[in-house]
Image (cartoon, rainbow over all chains, first blue to last red; front, side, top):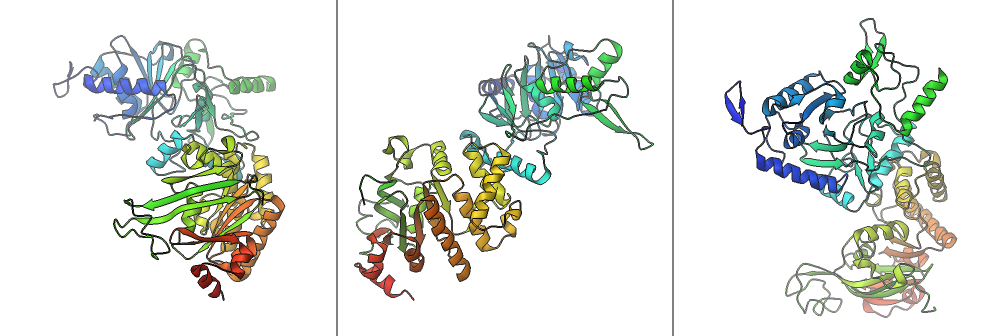
Length: 304
Length: 280
C-alpha cells in the first residue's frame, strides 16, 4: 500500500489493483506473441482522463517494480508538463527511481518520440498511443477494420498511399507512418516522426504500445522486422535536415526542432533533451544504427 | 460446343432468405408464380441453378425484377453467401474446388485475379473518395503490383481503351458523368485481365446514345481480350446484342435456356413468349 499524502488515502502499489495489473500483463503477453496485433483490454479508470496518456500509464504501472528506474518523455523532452505530471504520479504511487538519463532507465514511457540513444535488451519502451488503428483513416467501422486485419486486406491503405503520391508527389505522412510488423499486421507506430520508424525494426529492446481511450494494447518484440509501407519506385524517407544543425550543440545527426525567435528567425535544436544534455556535458551517446541514418551520415559527412 | 472446354461450372446453386421447410422448394417457383414459401414465409432468391460457362463465351441472364438474376451473379462474386450448391472455376485448385466454400482470403484472391464485376450503380463498384486511377490501382495493388509508375501506365491504358479522358484520371468519379463512371468501373473490373466478368444491368439508367457506346465498348473488349462474361439484364435488346447463349429466369428458377437467337425467335416457355412479345 502507498499512502497518498495530499488526501491521506491509501492506494495499492502502482495505483492499479493487482488483478487488473495481471489482466493487463496477460494482454501484453498476447500482444508480444502476435506482433502488431491490437489486443483489447480493460483500460481501467485513472486519475487522468482517457486519451491523456492512460494507455502508456496502464502498461507502465502494471510492469513497474521497486527495482525499476523510470524515465518519461513527451515530444523528446523530460521536462514538459505531461511528462512531469505523469512522472510525479508514478513516483508517488510506486516510490521507484526516476531518471532523465536514457541509459539508466529500465522503463521509458514516451509520447511522440523514440530516444535518440540506442536502447538495450534490458529496457522497455512504452508508447502512449492516441489512435491505434492504422486503417481508421480509410475505414471508419471497427468491425470492418478488424476483418481487414484478420484477412490481411490492406488494399485501401495502399490506395491511400497511392492517392497521396498522386496528389502531392510524395507520401505525405509526417508522423505515424504505417508499418508492417513481422510481415503480417499493418500497425500504427504511434505518432513518432519518420526519423524514428527504422529504429522499431530488429531492436534489442521491447516496444509496448497502449491506447487508453481506444482500449487497445500492441507490441513489437525485440528483433522483429518492422517495414514502412513503400512502393517499388516511391520509397519511404526519413526527415532530412539538410544544411541545418543544432544551435546549442552543433549536432547534425539528430531529429531537430524548429524554433521561432522574437525576431522571426528560425533556429534548430536537438529534440531529444537528454541526448542534447549528454552531448553538452559528457560524451555523445551511442545512436541507433539503421541504413537511413547511415545514408544520412555519409551524405552529411561527404558534403563537409 | 465441346464439353471439356469449360470455365465455370455451377451446380444446384440455391439461396433462400429466412427459415425454410422441406416443402419450400416444392411450393415455390414459376408454377406457383411466387418465390415465397406459403408455409414459412421464406423467400427463395434462386434455387437449383445449373449451368456451364465456356471460355470466352457471353452468357445472358434475363428475367423480370425479383427473378433472382442479380442474386445469382452476386452469389458467384461472393457479395452474398450461398447456403447450398457448388461452383467450380477452371484453373483454380485442380478445377474441382467449390469456390463458394473457400476462405474469405481465397475469395478475395479470386475476386482480384480471376473475376471482375460491373454493378448497375457505379457507387457499388467504385470508391468515390478515391480518384479514378486510385480505384483501378486498388485492383492492381491487390494483385501484387507495387510500382506506382507501372500502375499509372496500366491505369491510363485501361482508361484510354474505355474512352475515358486520361488527363482526368486523378479526379474522383464524383465529377464524372454516369456513362464515364460506368466506363471507369469497367476499367477497374478488367484491370487484371480476368478470364471472367460479371455485368449486372450495366446500361440501365444510362441514356440511349451512351448505352450504345458502352455496349459497343463491352463487345469490343470481349472480342479483343476474349473474356467470358455473364450479362444480367431485363433488356432483351442488350441480351440480343451481346450474348451467345441465354438463361431465362422466373421466380428464382431457370425456365428456359438455349442459344440467344433461338430463344428470341422461338421462345418455348410461356413466360419467355410473354417477354419476347412485349419487346417494343
